[in-house]
Amino acid sequence: MRKPIIAGNWKMYKTSGEALELVNGLKSELKGESAVDIVVCPPFTAIAKVADALKGSNIGYGAQDMYWEEEGAFTGEVAPKMITDLGCGYCIIGHSERRTYFHETNDTVNKKVKAALKHGLTPIVCVGERLEERDSGKTFDVVKDHVEGGLSGLTKEDALKVVIAYEPVWAIGTGRTATPEQAQEVHKYIRSLLGKMFGEEVSSKVRIQYGGSVKPDNVKAIMAGPDIDGALVGGASLNVKDFAEIVRQSKR
Ligand code: 13P
Image (tube, rainbow, N blue to C red; front, side, top):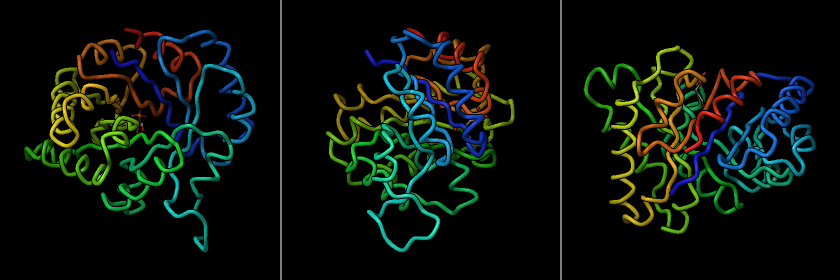
C-alpha cells in the first residue's frame, strides 16, 4: 500500500516572514496527521526559517530546484549539499516552468535526479504534456520521453526512492484540472512504463502524484484513481486552510 504524499510547491511566492506565517499555520492545522506524507517546498530564501519552524514536526520540506554539481563557479545556482545542509528531504526537479522558462531538458533533469539521489534527497520528478501535445494525441509520447529521459540510468534501488509528479501543463494555474479519468489514465501509463524500466515490484511501489489546479473540492475525486498517490499543489498550497484540507481529503 503506497502512502499518499501531498507536497506544496510555493513557487516564487512568500518572503521568509510570510513563509514562517504560512508554515506555522500548517503546523497547527496538521498536527498529528500521520496518514499522509506532507511536504512543503518554499523558495530557497525561506528554507532556513521554515526548517527551524518545522523541527520535530510531521511536515517535511524541500527545495524547488537545485544544480547537479557539487560546488563551483556557477553563479546563481544552489548545490545539493546546500539544501541538505538545511535539512531538506526533497527536491522538485524538472517542473514544467523550469522546462519552459529556464530551458531544462530531460538531460538536465536526469543529472539533477542523480545528484539528488546521491545526496539522499527524494526527487519529485515532474512530467507532463502541453495543451497542443494533448490535442494532437501526443500525451503518452511526451510522458514516455520525460519519464525515460528523467530516470535514465537509475538502478532499481534508486527508482524506489523517486516520486513522480504528473502535471499536465494545461492544468497548471489555469483552474482547468484534468478529469479524474484523464489523470488515472496517464498515471496507469506511467506505472506501466516504470514496470518496463525497473520491473513490476518497483513500479508497484513508486508514488505518482497528480498536479494541476488541485483544490480541496477536487482532490478526493482525483485521489480515487488507483494509481494516484498524492498531489503536487501550487496555488492552493499558499493557503493554510486549503492545503490542510487537501491533506485531510487525501487519506486512504
Ligand atoms: P497549481 O496548483 O497552481 O495549478 O500549480 C500546480 C503546480 O505547478 C505544482 O507544481
